[in-house]
Length: 374
Image 1: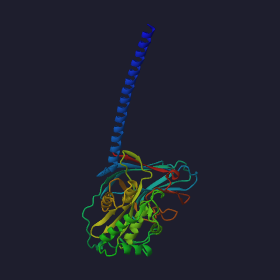
Image 2: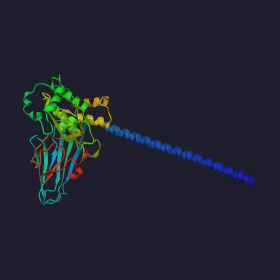
Image 3: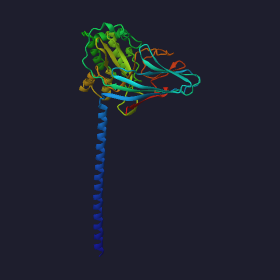
Image 4: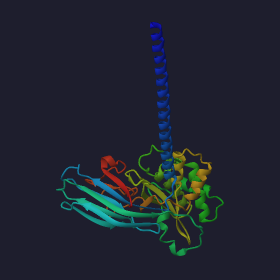
């Protein structure tokens, strides 16, 4: 009897183990199914995000708001601020410009400098303790698709274009720059061919360097020795070489508009170039964004993707940016107390006549927010 009982108990134990094993197998199978489903969902989301990044917006609309707070500086100090205001162009429409400012101890005005750059000027009196201001505007930007680029003699424009052939403190057009421009454009007879040769040389010989502060300062002499930097550096070399080759050129300073519905663009400043082609007008070029893609996407410069980008940004341009200003060695309106401004792509402020570091928004302090149009 005892023996039969032991056998029965053993059978029950074995059956229980089998059931547990079966349950565990089912649970593991269900868990694996859930993990696989989750993994597939993640892959789909990642793919969607990658597709979003690759998406070209034919048009981009949104609101950019710059918020500045200079309240940390002691009462009684002289505090002045200049903020760039964008303007309409063939591919850009600006509307609903709004300023939020407590004018109890401040005055504001919208002014224009000698190059036509528009700006908001704010000055606080000695009694001010709250020095906050916000500048918002709606921007609508269209993608630029290159059409046929042709040139023909246009004497009427030559005098007004002289400004864009001149050297600047960091953008020389003689000496080494002239020698290099002559070498790059040797055998080229038209302005279009000369600039294309300079564009190709810039992409082939310069590189983006993420360690550079802000957009870079664009000191061309130093960049010829070490041809790497960010967008202002790359475009300063491009513009200097164009001018040295006798082709009017200029840098455009602006800010990005994110592909996201809402984003922080405090460090979204960007610089690109335009060159003037007789009988055609200003033509866009952005070797800086080509070189950024080479770095970010780990491309080789001989890759087909790089060639496609180089072709796209030669006369073409995405819609994910707003042009703010142009020019170097600027005198703002009203005139700043410190030295001429290298460029006006950032908020600019002076405390007791000394410029704040606009490359350091946290210390300055300011932020720029983007909201997609609903």
